[in-house]
Length: 156
Image (cartoon, rainbow, N blue to C red; front, side, top):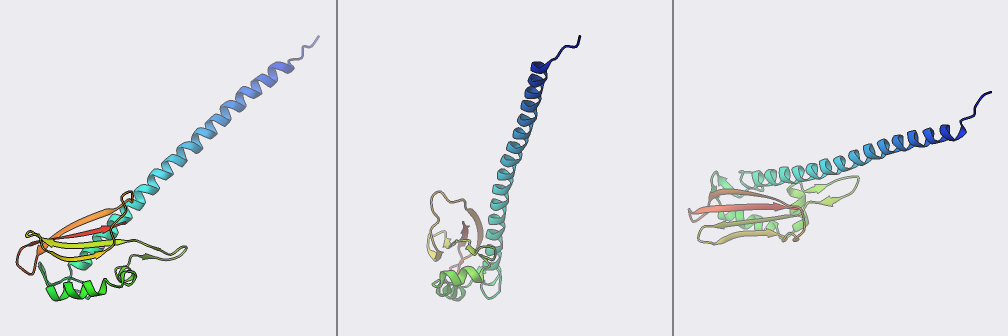
């Protein structure tokens, strides 16, 4: 006589299926959370890299720079940049802060130059929102009054 084990076979299949689906669920959940962490770190690093690049542009002796020779800030160049900053979107494009396709997005900017007196030589851009992820780069130079000037570049 042969015995039929129908109930036991179904029970083993259910247990094996549960184990398989739990392993698949754990793997997908782990990959999803790890991807989100790495994506946020990438966005933060890219923002910081752009902030360093903008501060390098501002402290160089090129068209958008604020110095006539390192490390002395030039008041005429600061005034020119302040006029250029009146066209905020144009300034963002000049600084390379406009992202292209697949969607057009601007990285916003705020630049301030103050010295130890504390006199403000330059205030350009918008104020960042409270909850926005931002990158701040601080550089130092000599102000037109031969004081130590602080250049803060904030991107978000």
